[in-house]
Amino acid sequence: MTGPKRRPNPFADVQLDRVPDRRRDPRWLEERLHDPRSRVIPVWRARSLVTCADPPSAVSIGVPPRDPAGRVGPILLGMEGDEARFAMDLSDSDDPLAELGVEGAVFEDLDKVGALLGRAEGALLAYARGMVHWHRRHLFCGRCGSETTSIEGGHVRCCASDDCGILHFPRTDPAIIVLVTAEDACLLGRQAEWPPLVFSTLAGFVEPGESVREAVAREVREETGVTVTDVAYHSSQPWPFPSSLMLGFTATALRSEPEVDENELQEARWFGREDLRGRVASGQVRLPRHVSIARRLIEEWLEGPAERVT
Ligand SMILES: [Zn+2]
View 1: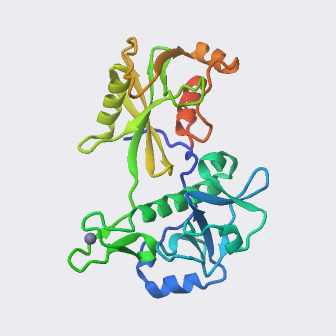
View 2: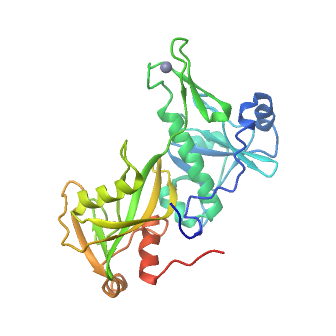
């Protein structure tokens, strides 16, 4: 997959050194947990701590991190210069703000505030949210059902059973998202549960035994009956809602009338460039949120070729 180098998408490009080698050094980790320069990103029931200001910004807390239940433990995200950044799950607390003694801040869903945050903050909170989500879903071994424990700075969970003992690693689920075009039109769809008038690019999870290009062709065919003829990689985006990696593509297709799979979409339509511009301007069509790669794919097509970063 080659293509022009593009600016990162929202939630991508965490500005940390992930220090994979250091994670295996318990003594070094313990020192970081008591280093006053270290900071902790709290996550509570999938929500991130941000200021009540407009626009909000991320709030971190000092070390040592508080962990009421201790089931997840501190997760080393990485180093910002010589300062460690950890994530911490506070989901077992009923009143995390009081426990932290934090004022002027609130736990918010990143899905809601992500677009308002600075790029680096959004990426850091997405990383923390994704890691905590993985831990919460892997407190027990998927193979034997025993409890697991966090090791290597929270980047591995180890099954506690002597008979099993397998290691579980953080996972992310690949999903494709694709802007399909034919001549001077693009193919957008809408799902019944979306807000009124919203149309977006087609998307779906990659299945086992399938390349991403195959997934693009299959999803477009399944959802609309349209056959794509050429698929090109665009860019990717961590999408921690809860654990996807969005792989963005553009594809060209033979223009045919969409035949919608009603289990997947309510409607799919071809929109000419000028037509879509006009409908968006007049409020007859709404595009997906700015924070999404879908929005970027559509806007770049509306505006013309993507700018190249040198
Ligand atoms: Zn096990």
